[in-house]
Image 1 (tube, rainbow, N blue to C red):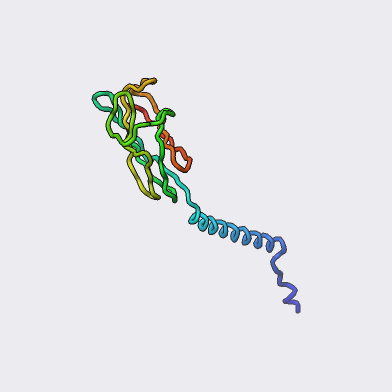
Image 2 (cartoon, one colour):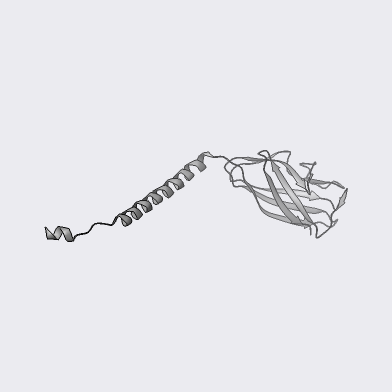
Length: 157
């Protein structure tokens, strides 16, 4: 009988700490599991502008190339391109029109999930009412059907 009285059990404080630690671990595991499930059923568009380059021709006209990738889970449809908050209104031309800027993007341009694409914009060296020159930074904004704007600053060379 004396041997049984000398044995001690885990104190109530230590037992409480162990129970709380196990409960927190289980809660974290469940939250990660639920996050993984919810992301499979949530669709969203996300276009990344991976790179932007600017080149100039002998006449002083610029070509801006943007490499795009849709890293979202939904198809992204780009509707408009804005340069310094002015919409490019000449789509699918691919050549410079004096005094205007244009792009080889069609009126709407779709990127499926995981797809990459290259979009070119052509800017003449003079565009009323503003004059652009080498060293000027321009703000390029792509607007999507989902209401998202994707912005890139490019310096003209």
